[in-house]
Image 1 (tube, one colour):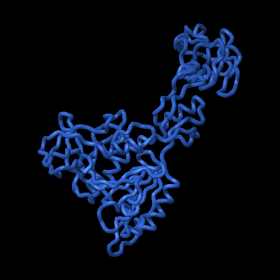
Image 2: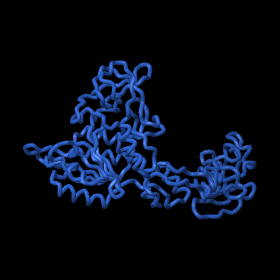
Image 3: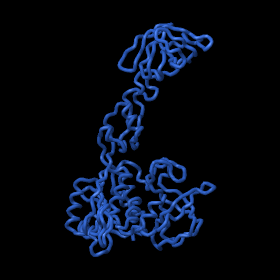
Image 4: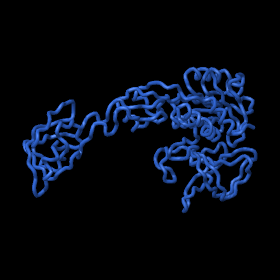
Length: 424
């Protein structure tokens, strides 16, 4: 059987980042920058007030205090907006609003709370230092500064920053379009009353959700029957409208494994047995420039296969490092952690096994792995409560309690993870 590492390596070697394109800013959220962005404008673009109050000369209000307030005439008012204020005459102040341009000659802002709020004259009860509450032009970003580096994922803050420097169409690797379909004449759509021998198509929902979490634009197709003509027609139609195609089921040694039956006629997709559990049957190829993943039909096998093989490929297509587990700065580059096993576990000889485990920290801060429940390839309840996939080497058949092993972290919602670390 082929090793897990070799299969993963072969997939990544065949995957390339999506070709960059200029995308409207409103559509770039979640995309990855394909080129450095340098500022062509200053941020702020002009000296302006950070507070509502009065623009003044610091020397004119240097002696102001509660016991000895300074009273000055108010020469006017400056609102935020497209205005060019007149220079500030010595011995006067002007009312100014937050964001309004600073008049020439002013070098401090007296915040409203330090005054009596006067309109014609104002009594100032506290002396501001020179430069107080003034936002200087370019103090955040100067023209020519590197704003965002290539490879940056565009989240809310990054989108706001691009807007601030007036970038309307950044160059990005677009999010890949992924089509997901399950096969099997026994499948029915969720919400449908079940007849004899029928099961709910959970795979397409799970894999579609995983692809969405991985940053893809996802189209989920209702389960396709085991009829070769129906599957072939659906497959060909999807190839014309997608960047990645993922199937589940129909790739083992059964008499009616339709995916293998139809796609084996092409030399572009290879069906192989991988030395792993769960997920031994796998298929992959590139058809007409579209990567095609044919995953096993057992639901746990399908999702584990997605984490090990598909998610890294989608990351590479998006222009990111292809580390498993959705690697980020918050976790190791490989997406793995070292854990101590809390209980004895059995493993299949000659296969790399991936028990689903829950993680918690002990009193010393060490991560401890405990079985998440049923470990069968059909038992989704265990995977649904798991934090990670334990990695048991091929040559190991029994893992004694206390053994330290790597574990692949599973993606979680972006709030705090189970061990007090924000992971997203």
